[in-house]
Image 1 (cartoon, rainbow, N blue to C red):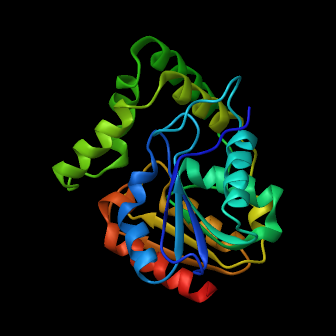
Image 2: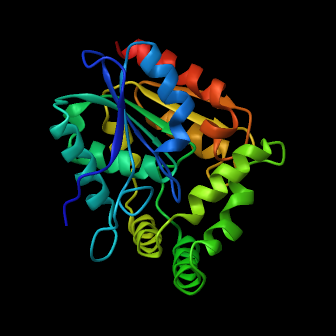
Length: 257
């Protein structure tokens, strides 16, 4: 099932285009600070809600990275973007890898924020399956209970914590289940990253326990042309350390331009 993704589109139309892909179970609003900074610097910034999250409806059938990537490429086509830079946070990074597998010639640059290139382990897949059942039984509260404390550090502002909590609670059950299915089935992206010719930015929170700094260093080492930036905070660095992540992304984007 093809979907048209709701999205924001800021900055000059003639600017170098950058697509920002959010994580699970969030929406495009997690990129607010980086979107403002990039648009103010003259880049055209598009931030969609991925299917089944934010204002985007869930698709039909099992979730797959191919479905998410297809949605993103259709968005780029309809926005008139022949080539573009792509940034993905956590699950958004997995979607970005799938876009890179399908259309590497379209990527001007890739930013990987608090994500990893390896697939789920067997234990990880079992954990996804258990979470699917909890979500079906308890709704999005199961996501909040399992994920919120791991995404933000104890020093995160209370306003940011409550904003993230509210976003998680709006996630439809079908959308959450499809995302968990897609993440559990995603392939290893190591070879994809090694094959990319475009500049790669890798950003990670120094306290990230979900996609730790060692995973970020492995990605930076695998890429041909990569820069690694470690910033304060836990997993959700674009929200917890917005200025540091924006600074890193601005330097990356200006290098592309």
